[in-house]
Length: 190
Image (tube, rainbow, N blue to C red; front, side):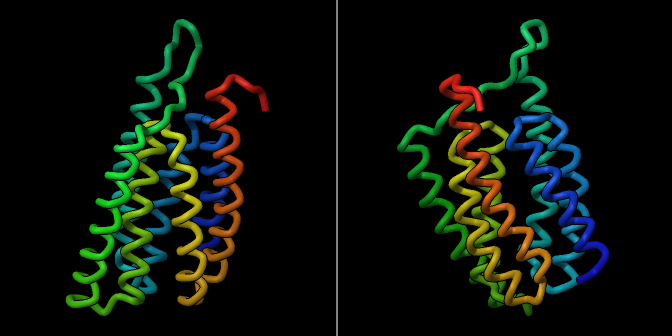
């Protein structure tokens, strides 16, 4: 366990807690967290996860701007949580599965990546869930549940025990986020 892993873990918990609460400050905290974890994952040869952190950086910036632009300052309302249409959801899942297999194959054939297919699944699933989160789609939370389930096993196998523990916390926070965002859609207070 490195000091960087500890810093990334703390930032991750703070950032996700802010996201669950639909607090705009979750985005800059997330930017710091993904920058730290890019190094942590590169250091243990989880290259897809390291690349994912760089992609997250871009998506975090997009989410921050999207949430700011979607808010209505005059009425103090925020960007609303919405749902994906079933056809769009199915299409994203098919594209995601294909992309994970393709990326995993590329990593297995061209690098010394550890667990290339599992790592690729984390990469692709996370990009999809993060994109949905940036658009405030309710489906981001079940997406995070799936990604976090796989990530716990991969990080434990790579002796990133603190990070595996972080993803156990993220798993529980994804349940919390799903409940809170669903409530905000129906106007039920928490």
